[in-house]
Image (tube, rainbow, N blue to C red; front, side, top):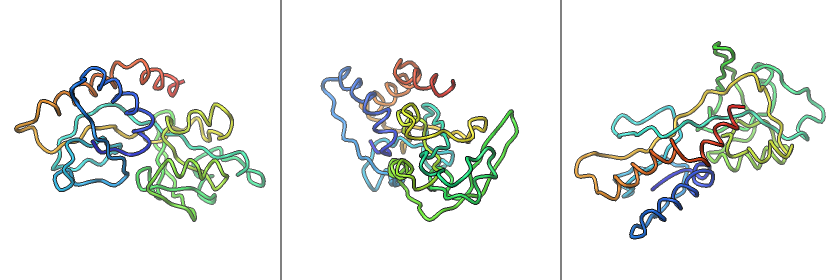
Length: 211
């Protein structure tokens, strides 16, 4: 299985542990990377991806939704005003990622769409790195809620623009073909599909995000 660090640490670390408890004769080899691997060339059976841009040549099973928040450390605003609307982000130092809108951040408020061009001196393809940079006061980040939940609760990060909802991303299980699918892969797909729907752990996180 291939997946990004954020979903690996916040979801699959729990889900895969439960899976192995249910299937004591099976083993999982998890490749943690933010690169969109070639499933066939890299011999990957399954990729868990957070995206709104699926490859048409692959099969994708929807699992859940990734909600994001805009956040920054209090120290970042020592000499700056805290933004109150999306356009306030434009002149500020924003930490950007190709996976969460490198230069265009999209929002919705009361059913109305908003977007703003953002930029900054630091960009990366790893959201966990950008979360740490935000903690250190490097700028404003769009982060998966699950990745920064504990920092928001502790006050180490401030949630910005709480009335504007960043565009959500889908969480998908992606694989190459339904033909001759191994029973092991089918078992993982079925388990993950059920886990994201029924897991008390995951559902409690989603409810916290909603409130």
